[in-house]
Length: 635
Ligand code: PRX
Image (tube, rainbow, N blue to C red; front, side, top):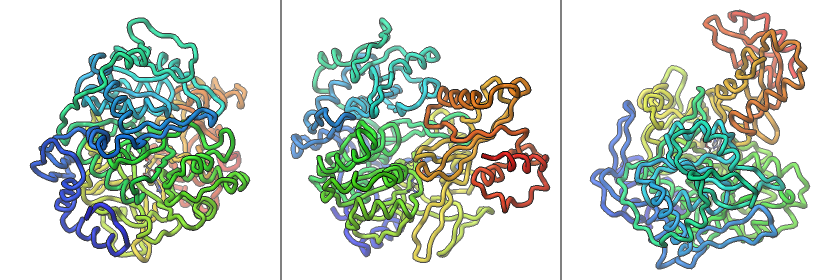
């Protein structure tokens, strides 16, 4: 296990130096020691960031599910692989062993085959956090189908866009989902979406809520009867290293979502390696990541990373506030969770509640705490450290992205001294660079700039599905020869990184990545709206909330403003989902624009954040007079 488990800071530096001196030798050693390959690779890495083209372990053959499941059957067959904790605490938790998982994945894979799904076909999965979600992801991987999980909070329009973009053949969903005391009609959302998706031939429906739903003859099939008839073994499809494993959509600065495509071998090696190190995972630990599998965090650190390591991974269906604000801690005590990984927005929400919700539970099983998704503020960091970790558990502030596939910057617990709000040091093999606006690298410490990565790591996304040019333009064109993350960062006096936030038009709300353009597009569909601009402003629980500036058409001027606000948020809910709703809507006579017609979001951001003392030079604007008016009427 030479390279695999870093145990102290000196070792981290040794491993890190080795990993950047000769990345190929480093990753080859990791890949050789810990995985099951059907055929060895011909070359470890081929890359060219100008094209961009990246290939890891080219020539190798494998199936990731053999690494996640089959290989553990002999030594860990009766160990719990997935520990399912339902929404309702009165419903019993399910312990799905590696043996059970093997059977469930094989049966599901055979059902997919019977439905005509073949290697390379796209399968859209729109499911709540129930075991079928993890099982269906793995079933796709078993037969070489490309899964594209769509978070079950997205609207029917957003779902349809994704189904059509990846030209999926089949959708997997459920009759509904439980979230706290709400029941959501997922099948109804799918039915609505499929009116716009002629390519979908069949829909598999898992039963969860028991709600009465419409089943379309010939298209919709209940899953369970098909599983009951399916054969319990399924020979894995042999995949090439660079065969696609999944597509996962993320927002961008322009309208259409980006289908980030991840491939097989590099993704497996990197998520497994980082899971083990960033969480110091040991056999018999009970690891819990509270994310949804609809996001990259769930793909890499609920499903693939933990299972490749033979871990027990908790899957939680519910929400942190149901039946009360102690739910997370009740689950930690009940299952004796050792690693707990969540988002700063959840921590901030829980920190607002009575401390009794935390103190009444025994959290002594915890060893490592993690956060992801957005910068964690100092206050939330200390609350997490003091009250959840009892000052004994290192907090790993893990920075990464849908595009990176795995954690790139993070402390190694028990090795890297933590520092509140700092993601600290790069993982082995990761070579960050801070760039100035002229495209020059800023060397040395105590500096800040735009965060780029200079060298490929194994789980970097290989393309945007169907749009390689956009992949190149978005990530590899701002700084020549480097991957540009879209984030700003600073490097302190000892070389620790702190992520300062997005430098583009993406806003992170409650840890969810939202592009301004799709939200503006949705608002502009309202018949009374002429134009709109969205910016983020600080929010004490969500991190950022959305502020919309809306210009009405003449026809809209006479309408009731409160009703209009409701309708605008309704438009957003229909086009994207409730996560993108605006906290504040201001109707404005115009938007500040440059002479070339570009909206000056910088000014709008300052007004939304109530920082109007220092707006900078506005005299060069096309319409400086509008700024004063917007400030006067700001909310
Ligand atoms: O701005 C960064 C922020 O989340 C963005 C990536 O979002 P997404 O692709 O949805 O993936 C989230 C889960 C990996 C980044 O560009 N972000 C993520 N983690 C952190 C963070 N910002 C600060 N600190 C973090 N630990």
